[in-house]
Amino acid sequence: MNRKQFLVLLVLVLLIGGAGLWMFRSDVASWGTREAKTGERLFPGLIAADVAKIAMRGAKGAVTIVREGDHWTVAERSSYPADVREITDLLAKLTELKVVQTQTVTEAQWPRLELADPGKGDGAGVALELTGKDGKPLGSLVAGKTYLKKDPLNPLPSAQDGVPAGRYVRVLAYPQVAITVADPLAAVEINPGRWLAKEFIRVDRVRTLNVAPADGPAWKVTREEEFMPWRMAGADRFNVPAAMQAAQALSGMTLADVAPGMKGDALAKPLVITAETFDGLTYTLRIAPKDAEHYYLSYSIAGEPAKERKPEKGEKAEERERLDKAWAQSQERLAARLKFERMLQGLVFIVPKSSVAALLRERFEMVPPARPAGR
View 1 (cartoon, helix red, strand yellow):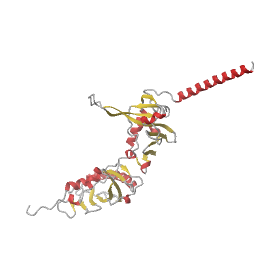
View 2 (tube, rainbow, N blue to C red; view 1 turned 30 degrees about the horizontal axis):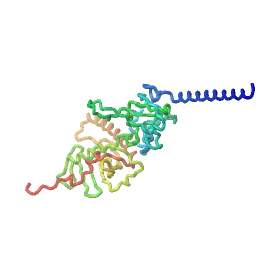
View 3 (cartoon, helix red, strand yellow; view 1 turned 60 degrees about the vertical axis):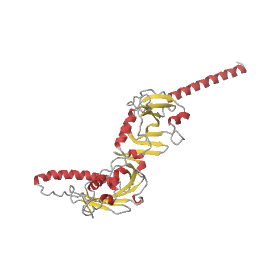
View 4 (cartoon, rainbow, N blue to C red; view 1 turned 120 degrees about the horizontal axis):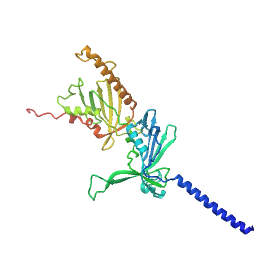
């Protein structure tokens, strides 16, 4: 073999070797981004009970939900207790989430479907990551654009798409594939307030209610026994239904969100509400406007529940055991609730205006104008 033949042979070997290497890499790449099959689970093998952390990142911030022992908390809201029902619902959906349809997309096309990584410009989705107790990743996705369908209850030809039917997602196993799933995954959004436990302070069995606006006269209503009528200090006639509504509002307030990093003493010119209960507790609430639909609220609790039951008037001996048992059970529930409420003292909450509207009435709304003489 002469020199020329050797060089030709060497070139051929290099070309064949390069082609083989290219084919090998192509096979590896296609194996790493295997085709997403319709009907298969997005996270095969995912077990909800193994998840210890749910982290979501988006263009508007982050939400981190962490399991601590038997409880879930929201990190961005001062580790406020999380709503277990919302968490259970989301994890149940993720374990059963299946591929409905797929389409090939390049990275440049991700923003069109809102599938770009958060922090990398427009068209970003919401990145969701699931982590186990040992810190091991259990699954992740980028949730993108919600797709809509026509309302099945509107048969008109002119009906437009408007009902959320599913969502585009992208997962690590298929980086160049936009996957359509049959659930809009409404919970996958950057809204920490959504994940907060809905339990809130509940002021029951109010005996005395004093409402003191920052500007203007205060008003106060009392009752001697729990089922006796209300009386207003300094007024023979007053708006009794309004007093009843105010007391009921204290036991039915709802939570919208927690104001992170805010202190109760920072509220400007708050309305101060003092409620004494038949259980021996005194709740002091401070309320101030946040916006047209919401108010800030902070509270403190003083006093301790009674240690022994006060016998009822005319109580018979044979009834005592039953009444003592019922009272002990109610005190057990009260103690558990009080522990939860005291744990959250010092936080500033955001509540819907409708939740506290009955407590915002001024004195002139509680006391009707005097009747003209002779009428």
